Image 1: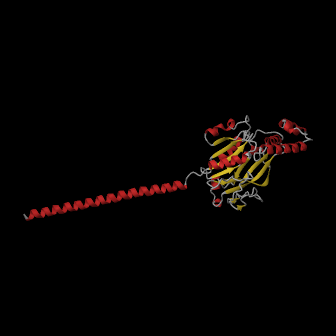
Image 2 (image 1 turned 60 degrees about the vertical axis):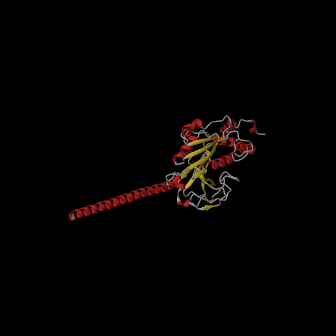
Length: 329
């Protein structure tokens, strides 16, 4: 009987040990599973943080264009090549004038370019300001930066930057809301006619210039192009910098001496005499139509007077300025 009790005690002890071991094993498994879940949660949090920091850095380009089909493809390809995510082209052509989709439809279909109809604007509108204001209002929340250039302006970055994102992510611009990039004027006043070559290969002569154009940070609290008096920059009081990151006057259209430290805007102002005449005739998008026509007419008169002794230039003038508005009195 005594032996039987000893055996039962041993069995009971073994059973208790087994239960204890089972509890310990289950506890360890539970702890392990909890830590596993915790590790997964921690990894997910880290991943979300990385996604926030590594989110797509988007840069857009706003431009208004008229009679630019000869150059729009070169313009678009240049800016896509240096990293711009999308180009917004405001079509300021005449009602029955040329259409941008005739030459860049492939980029439009890929949604790399968007055409916004700005034809048949009212005579008292100033198209370039309306376009810039509209472009910033619609897109500033979706883009980290928006550039406001013309179709005869080509941005060239310092070779140390691989892309426009690389340039704008430079720590020298962390305090900037508007980066003002100086023009460099490219012109060829020797050629009379258009030459079917890439613009940047055709013209290499240039001179420095104090004018600037703006690249503006997105998500600014007020409409950037409100109360504007110049297409070069806004009059709103935002922190403005040159291409070297130095602070500059916020409402000025100039930086003198020009700052080409990290970028320049190659402005192909005078491509040939023929194209310069076309440029004068189409008028200025930063003035109402009646004022623009007056400026075009005055420019035409100066052009005519300076070309009186050049038969070939007069021939070009006669061909391009053929409306009665340009009849000399």
